[in-house]
Image 1 (cartoon, rainbow, N blue to C red):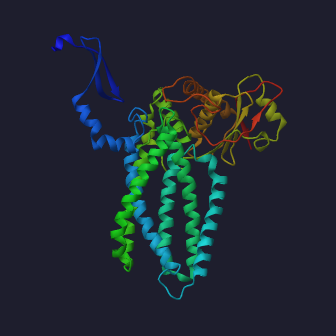
Image 2: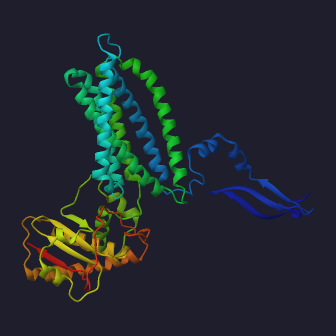
Length: 439
């Protein structure tokens, strides 16, 4: 049968790969012909490995930074597995494994205290910091891994201080449970970012498979490592230092590889700076590499979003002045002595209002950040400052109305992910977006 008698009707692909061609035969039947290279590819170990450990539809089903993040995350997980094994050996030695003078009861009490302290730490940390983990996922992820290394170091050195052993391992357990909360919560936030087809469960499951494989590799490596370091503290410390450096470096590279498409305080601050200089909105690829990864870095003023009215003013005159002659859906109060900017939201404030309000607050911070403690604002200068703040209105409108930053506009805060209180005000007179000085 000649090629002239066969007509190709369509081609079929699997993800971004060409898989087969469908042809019309002279007898009217539909013929399926697999591409030569793809026929081998689908039978190869490479494809089997991808189907087991990567989300369905990869790479189209995940974010563009997925592979880079998972690569460094795999390296850090392996390094953490090794240092964790060294810590486990030290703790077992400290509770009396191999020591005929130790009792089972004493070891059990130590272990119970260690676990109990950790449980309390888990509850306390989730209560105090839970609302902040979404907005600064990269920063808290790095914090968790640094704290994990500190906890592992404490467990390794604990046997050298038998009088304080229980206190040290309890503190370590406390830290590790904080790591569990921060690491698990931020991993969920990163999974949401990576999943592009509403496939969070698949991305999370495959991440678990990858981590399990890495831990298996770490266990095999540990089987050869433990006999070498069992009675050699110097070698134990050397391996801990080596793998901790690798762990921290891989973690830094992993979070730096993430290109978030939503705005938090740090990224919005960078967008604001870029906009004021060039009057254009930068892309996520421009902003993310500049984002600081240390918690609290570059924050000169505290910004409270959704603050209750009684925490910002007790003056009826100030409140009435704020409500005169406008219909915007937020108020901005600046407490100069405390260095706090408070944003009060109207009950009807939407995502655009939230972004505009926070943009105004960060612009105020940028104008005052050089010396907040000694800055003196006279009433005349407040009018000039308020005029400058109007420029931030343009940026707030662009961030809220355009999608150049990849914002998922919707919900109460749109594409802005900020830890905020839920207080909203329902005034009996029109609302005004203004700046009020509080002495």
